[in-house]
Length: 135
Image 1 (cartoon, rainbow, N blue to C red):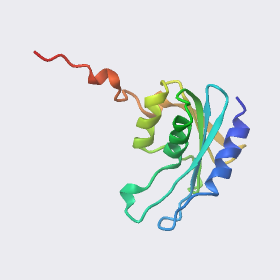
Image 2: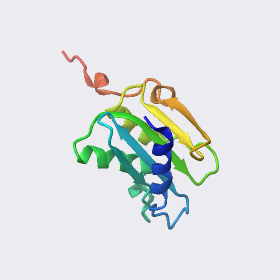
Image 3: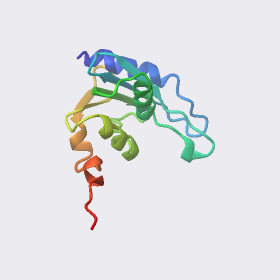
Image 4: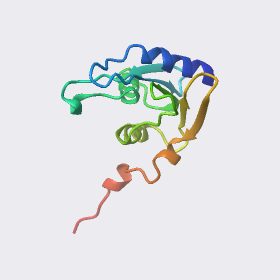
């Protein structure tokens, strides 16, 4: 895995963000186990609940193309610091990846840190939680 390339793709994706309300751009680049990279940016809506984050945009693009196994995701935002995914994005990532998914929080291709999805979302809600016994 080329972390530098993945970060650069996330930074490029950030340029396409649609953020007329917050002016806070985020880009993500998702690496699948097959080696493909899917990018995403945040897309705002005047009704904030309809806004979609960069990470989910990348995941949904990948899934819509048949990819459901991921190795890593790089995230870059305009905050000037490492930008972790929000709670909803963490949950969506956990639907398609295990705790070992590499989450790359990048200020630049030279300044980043790598953490696991398990560190970001310990005890994630999963399909195992849906198995209940009724009498």
